[in-house]
Length: 378
Image 1 (tube, rainbow, N blue to C red):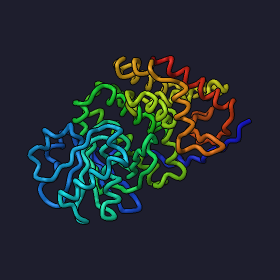
Image 2: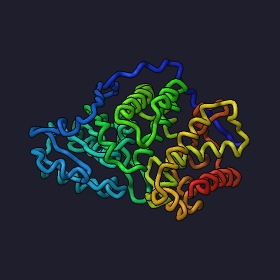
Image 3: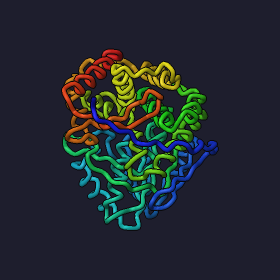
Image 4: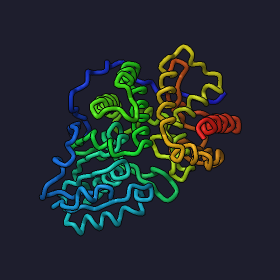
């Protein structure tokens, strides 16, 4: 029997009612506001003054008349790297940024990771603000202050904790996103709410998550997801205990994402990763028949994955090697030399962290689970 242990998950606190448009996040560096307002993007762009902007190059037309210096970044994994950071830092310096400059990030996760990281190290730390432009960033990564930077072939190997000064979310921007990005963001929202507990997940489902949902319904999804994540980051800001549970699906997902050459987007890969985690436990005779929320989570993820065009999921999966996925899985930074660190579902449906001994038998079980899920969607 493999050695294992579980983190005690403090989720007894009731889920609070949703605010109409905003919430506040407590951090070690102070309290920062998160505001959600449809069609607010253009009116909220920074004016001339003590700011510099790092933006996804997609927004070049919208920012071409900006009187604030703008550094454009391609939203690719290559940009989110230690190798790419020095050039961006030099451009910020050339734009005149000093210790009083507020760095404004406009874009999805790549821009956020780069901006948070650079803001934390430039002249020993700048304030920064964030305008997330992808559903995944709106429902998840925009709060918590965590940056993750790739180094060579190693995904998210380095990073810092550096909370933003403020976050402004315009759900209307989701109208411009491709299907897989909308679906991936909604998968992340479902995961966060599921981890928070039955009440939060039920409220998520009550808003009818779908790739073509209204902006008004998406706003409620965003607020509910951020309210759920708020509990984790305020109780465990530096990722030492409960917040680790939000990695549910990520270890499998990162391996699939990398093995696809990033042809499969992050949120979609996380959905596949959650299904791998559930399949792994099922093949080890864990039965979820008495836990309806597990079935609801699986149906929700399946619905999102089936909405993704074949060119963005089924076809890339045919090129993915299970062996490559498993090699990437085994080298994940969360594992130890003698054990795998896995976020799984207990038979009760609770999300738990387990450390399980590395062995030939364990590797075989993990590989079987990955093979089953990849075959289902390729």
